[in-house]
Amino acid sequence: MVKRHIPELAGVDYFGHTGNRGDAVAWGETLGAAVADMTAYQGHGSVATPHGILITWALMMEGGIQVNALGERFSNEHEGYSEQCVNVLAQPGRVAWNVYDERLHRLGLEFPDYRDAVAAGAIKSAPDIEMLASQFGLPACALSRTLEQTADCASGKATDRFGRDFTTKLPLEPPYYAVKVTGSLFHTQGGLVVDVEARVCDASGQPLPNLFAGGGAARGISGAHVWGYLSGNGLLSAVSLGWISGQASAKLAVDNTHSTT
Ligand SMILES: Cc1cc2nc3c(=O)[nH]c(=O)nc-3n(C[C@H](O)[C@H](O)[C@H](O)COP(=O)(O)OP(=O)(O)OC[C@H]3O[C@@H](n4cnc5c(N)ncnc54)[C@H](O)[C@@H]3O)c2cc1C
Image (cartoon, rainbow, N blue to C red):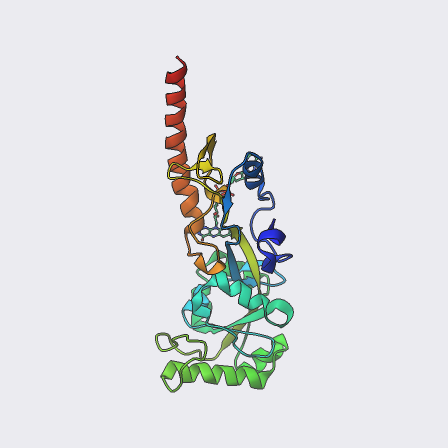
């Protein structure tokens, strides 16, 4: 289904539960339900590779940068971790490196999965950028130049060519840290079309009898693109459509009971 609906992520690591295979969508379609926004999903551009551990995006939001194998930045990291998965996968080797400093390392340590990444040896540090580059086989000159460019953006001497505002965060300073990451698919946002009562609808918008959907089974609210995903959109449709479908299905059961007695 990923290959059919989200071809840009075909074959990419899936970071959710292996039992999540889109069965509900297939069952609904068999019953004549409409589906929508099947191209939408939550990706993530910061999963340590080959360890498979999520590296918190807080590192980027608080001043860290992502570089590719050429030691160069390739995007505005502040546009969002979901769409950044596509940008990372477009880089040589489909990987990138999160580069940050001691201050951000300490921030990362507040997150359990970051501590797992430290324990797994995914995070490396060095007293200067040349030594950090050599640990990962990155070109030291290019990486130093990238750090100088971001420092210029932070001090207001230059503006970022990708449009990121560096002036609101502290510039990176030694000792430096880095982790090799790749892009990953977390969950899909498309699904069965539902009405305001979470009833599954057919292509003409008519609700099917006795069929409700919520969460991963139902179409989310992220639109049709990866950039439409905001933190919380997954659990939002699970919790609220779950609550709504519980209320609506109970009401339908009561109404059906009354109409048959
Ligand atoms: C790594 C990751 C990070 C995420 N981060 C966020 C986030 O920060 N914010 C956010 O809003 N969303 C996030 N999401 C998405 C969010 O988790 C999902 O959108 C949401 O959990 C979907 O809810 P659901 O009830 O449809 O499915 P699930 O939460 O997957 O629940 C399905 C349940 O059914 C059970 N089950 C499956 N098959 C059977 C069976 N045959 N018999 C009995 N039980 C069965 C499963 O064990 C599971 O407990 C993330 C997803 C992943 C994978």
